Length: 391
Image (cartoon, rainbow, N blue to C red):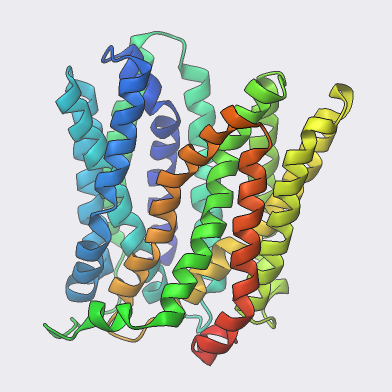
């Protein structure tokens, strides 16, 4: 019970995260008074702490069930948001960032298992797509609200932090009151879940491939604004235009794309996404050669290439990871799969930093990494469980 309630809860969570996450570094500088390098280090250190969470979260999902872990993650994130409100020093700011990162990683380690448990469909691509659209759109709306508020003074930053904390608590309340998954069958103690996973080479290969695809997503979110403003010297409003195009594209086409792909093996669909992302990365590097009057149309056009790949990748990769996990070990498998995103979160800023050595270098490196990952997909298609690959 409660599939629609879960979507509402995810929307509330994503709206609150969208309001605060894009301005979290600015909050550290303008409200707490830290210099920009220190604020950046705190953000990176908090993200690193989050990387410690998946093994524990995955184990608890298999033992407690995904809803219990998801609710716990909401309370942990709420504590982090509240601590931001009262933090006045570097240690307090680091603890706040670490709690937010840990709770967020626990969220992603549990939410997809809960979505699968609440879904009546045998094939989970569509429910994952609906959840992805909900979170993406609500995050974008939250980011838009943040954009309207920042610059209004310290009170505006504190308002978005408070709103973030409230969103986590409201999400937890909805989950506890209205979301009723099927009774969870706990995994047996000492069942060797992680040991078996570390010997599951096809699944580990899937994690490595998805790291490359996650890196493309992170470079779109973090690298495109830097590229537009500092390299191409585009007007600031072009960043918003690119974000709006990507959000609207996903809103209108995500579910349709999943329907169109229903008869295509998942690894084949991901191969297509990889080819599109390679073309996008190379086209981004080539933007340096585009005359200034044509840059905006060109950037919007290649954004559509990125979006098409993202529409394929988001639900397909998650469904493949969930379907490839053995019964009773889904929590640990899906949690470990989240490392592809977590490590990408750490690597992407460093990759963007290569812009200092040449503005096209990050995009060319990304294209190379994507090419290696895409080339590995036919082998994965023959190695992963047939039922997971063939839907």
